[in-house]
Amino acid sequence: MGHSVLAFIIVIGILVFIHEFGHFIAARLCGVGVEVFSLGFGPKILKKKYGRTLYCLSAIPLGGYVKMVGEEPGADIDSEDLKVSFTHKPLFQKSIIVASGPLFNFFLAIFIYYVLYQVSGIYLAKPVVGRVLEDSPALAAGIKAGDIVKEVNQNKIESFEDISRIIGKSKGEALNVIVERDKRLVGLVLSPALRPAKNVFGEKIEKYIIGIVGNGETYNKKLNPFQALWHSLKDTCGLVKLTILSVGKMIDGSVSARNLGGPLMIAQMAGEQAEAGIVNFVWFIALLSVNLGIINLFPIPVLDGGHLLFFGIEAATGRAVSDKLREKLIQFGAAVLVALMVFVFYNDIVRMFNGG
Image (cartoon, rainbow, N blue to C red; front, top):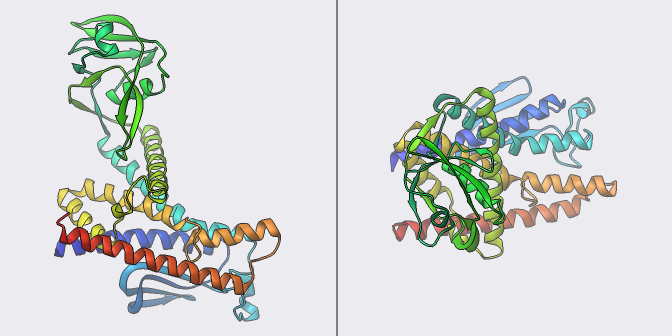
């Protein structure tokens, strides 16, 4: 349990620091004064003041905050501080400051993926046929176990994932396939068939297949800096898309909201990933960083996305949301977040007692 708590503190500390540093650096670049930069909430354990900013390490490691000069609309501000007041900055600068927290979480994921890909490359499934399914287009076309798929419709094949991607986009149209068999190239023509399958959420779907299974072998491909950057961006975008889809499916009931986890689940998973090795641990940090970035962009008052919603309304109407309405919406947003925290804690406790 001790290592899980330590791993949790490390993970949350990194994610919160990056998020709040995004707000902090954007505020400073936009000429906004920062009064407090805190990791954690509650009583301050350590604090040090540099310039006008008080840097703090607080007791409750479940978040953090950056307090800016003139952050609250209607707050009393000394005349000499007007030029560094958040409220008195142009709308686009305020939007940049608010959006920079989530953006830095995405940047962290990209950076982690980039470093991992530069250090260890990527592991790909060899495009070698391990088994041909009965009553399949591949069997009818003459593909055999042991064949190495070299090209599909003149697209060079490096991995089994390449084959799946091209087949998935084929719309059932005929494909020209070149395989290597007994050190010679063989050309084949086949048309993918639409068959029942399940997606990553366990939902029943239909997808195009040709009916081959890989042999399970992988190989390591080294990446140059540009390839590593491309894969980092692609994987981060893919993770963003998958996370948003997951949230949408929880909202419409397609996926159970009981899959949501809170601090206890994160701590358990952090401990497991730390035990599995540094690569797994930093990969887990990247995953959570993307999730944190997306959650903070939800249009819920209190979250960054809620503030961006206020700014969007101001940009569209030409006037800021009234202080009274803003206060009511923030109270509503806080209530939603408290309810969500209670729910995920409940999920964690039920999961713990069920041994799951």
